[in-house]
Each structure stands twice: as C-alpha cells, then as structure tokens.
Amino acid sequence: MSNLKITHNVCIRKEYETIEDGQKVTKASWPRVGNASPTKAGGGYKVNFDFVPLKEDGSHHTEFFLFAIKENSNEES
Image (spheres, rainbow, N blue to C red):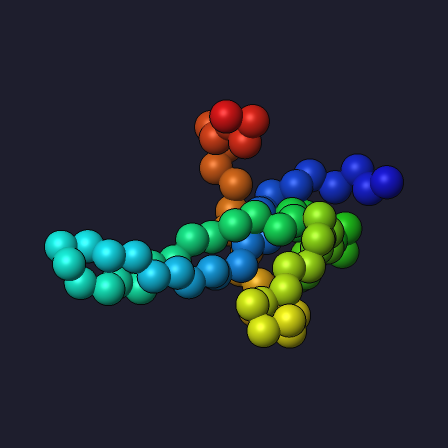
C-alpha cells in the first residue's frame, strides 16, 4: 500500500443523448474510475483504477482524465 497522498480523481468522459425543448442534445458525464497521486520522484503520477470501463461496443476506454481534488471537497457526499 502506498503512503502517497491522493491528489486527483481519474475519470472518463461518457456521452449520452437527451431531449431538451424537443431537440436531441448530446451531453457528457464524468464518472470516476480511480485516483492518482504524485510519484515519490516527482514528474509523474501513480494511477489506481477501481475498474476499467468498457464502451458500449465492448472496447476499452483509452482516454482518461485527471481532475485535481479540491482541498475543501468531501468525496463522501
């Protein structure tokens, strides 16, 4: 187990379609799939995945996004 402080959430971008004012609109959600922390040496991140999600066609997601965790955020809520 690592003692590195988790500083980022790892997310994917998941597009979906909805209807707004009678028009089909494409939107996106950003589900969290893991976390990341800086490496001890610096200059990089150690990424931990809770799971690697599949796209609807069965292929793996190949783009992952890191979002800094805000100091005052409460992930439990």
